[in-house]
Length: 301
Image (cartoon, rainbow, N blue to C red):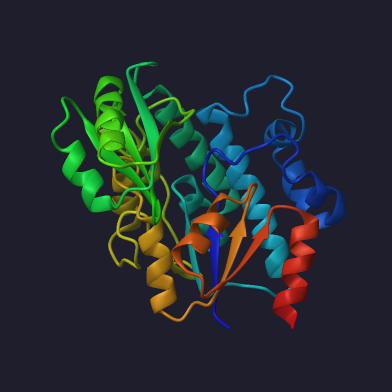
């Protein structure tokens, strides 16, 4: 058995996430108690801000890190790790590239940069269901304005990103080209597009304040869908304004012999992507203590 951990991305956040781990594991309680503002955000969200990018990213990272740490406590560690966009930072934090304190500082800055990068209403993202990537690429290259692919999630689900009018035009053309659905996403801007080039420079200035450690696990990166030896800060600067190759990352890990995937963090979105990418691998979702116990029982066999 060869294990890959996959860390959830922004959008999976939900009030109450991590609370059952907090109540069950003293190590998780100590972790959340060290970040009281984020603890309140995750468990209660009294201000109603959890779905805003500036808050969601740090809440998701801390929760995912906590869950992965409990898996490690129980003797389950990956050979490979990846994450979807924000989830890549969770994977890197778990792999001890930065301390959790530094990872929270970095992701807090990233969340603020992304939330404020583009004027509200001028850009958007949409999920395109039921078309191959080649058809989408060929169709969007002819629209007026900036429209690019943000996420290669799994076969039949690709997210486009860009200026509002360009994405709307692309959705109309993609539906005409055979897409089953074109679903606008509830996000604050055109993430993973060239429109965030300036934001990437601002993020790089923050990243360069920290010296990353060598990852404790093999990391498969969003920008290529494979392992990379380049400077980590170069990779992460590129990631914020570049397509996320999640499907390619899963296929790469399978090619390296990974036969067991564990999704870490709230929700089950990545599990569905992995199952649509391959029917030949085992997939476990750990977003609750119940899911954790089921995963431990299955893997310890």
